[in-house]
Length: 396
Ligand SMILES: Cc1cc2nc3c(=O)[nH]c(=O)nc-3n(C[C@H](O)[C@H](O)[C@H](O)COP(=O)(O)OP(=O)(O)OC[C@H]3O[C@@H](n4cnc5c(N)ncnc54)[C@H](O)[C@@H]3O)c2cc1C
Image (cartoon, rainbow, N blue to C red; front, side, top):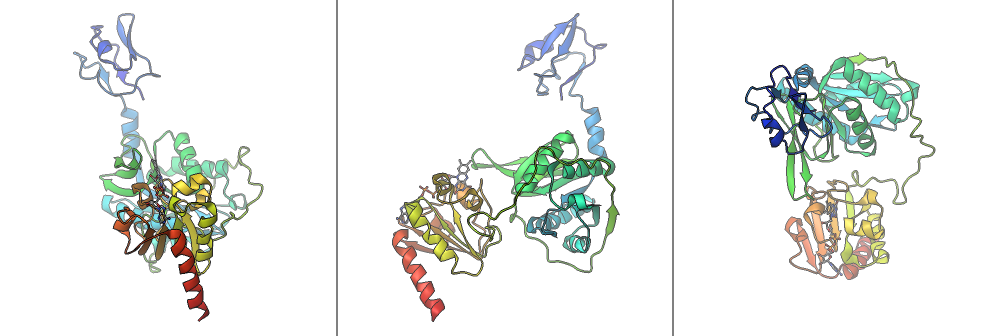
């Protein structure tokens, strides 16, 4: 959005031209003129104009902002059931909606409704917008974008939250571009100031937390990391309104076609859902040593392997198992950290685990600051001993 110049009012004094940091202002026929491609709407020229001929414009956007109502959560389905982050987002959206006097609404796009609306109400939704049909059985970028955008244009939400999952990260930016609004990706905190959502996310390499608002365009949009918020305990007594919506544009994606779905090498347990995460870092020294973590993980009923970014970069484990700021956030019952230093970006993804057990040969490693149990020693020696002990315990 560029600044607006009232040509009638402009007296051609040129004082604005010199103040523009991007050189977007020039004179044309004795009047100030703005190049919309280079104007960054910084407003430097606004105060400089002696006759008030320049404004930041935005009247249409302000109107748009005033129109938005309600907080929406996009429901993500897996095998026909909402995934964990949907319930987490409904819980936080319900609290934020109560804070600003709006409603918490869930958007369900799928093959059929079944008993899903009841589950969404129990988790905090007041309204469920449902778009159903066989064509929505599997996630499809264009079909889902079309459905969501038609709904949003009809009901004008104030804000929309998506899980920062593979599908959410694919869908949300496309919708934001289509609706000509902003998107704050990968948020780790949410709050309300009036009807503005304050989206918080790590910035500058995780060294600061930035709080971002989208004050003019609607809907305000963001993706939120799974496991950052806790889902509310389901309240089966809650009910709400179901709005069935018939979408006009049902054109499927020609860009993305899913040919085959396969489990990743690391198996079927998602790291976000695991109760025990056995993680390793560069301190394990080699891919072969790292493989011992798999031996350890299978000894637990719901255990899986995790890793620091350093070992993902080394190729010892798939990115799907990276824990941290640019990986996954995990909150298992037990988190093992073998040879992981505990960089701030790693801690961002695991410090909320119930119990953290760290093994590091450096007694001053930062990981020990968040660990309940710490062993100063060589992870390569301790890991096989621990595996042997647990095996012996299980056999006994
Ligand atoms: C924008 C950005 C995003 C990032 N995102 C992530 C992220 O999502 N996840 C992540 O993990 N990192 C992330 N990082 C990288 C992060 O800053 C660290 O570089 C990384 O976590 C280090 O991994 P590490 O602890 O395995 O390795 P190192 O820092 O090299 O630490 C190895 C540790 O092993 C110990 N050690 C060595 N030998 C042994 C042994 N034999 N026995 C026991 N201990 C031993 C050492 O004392 C040391 O503490 C990010 C960085 C940036 C800039």
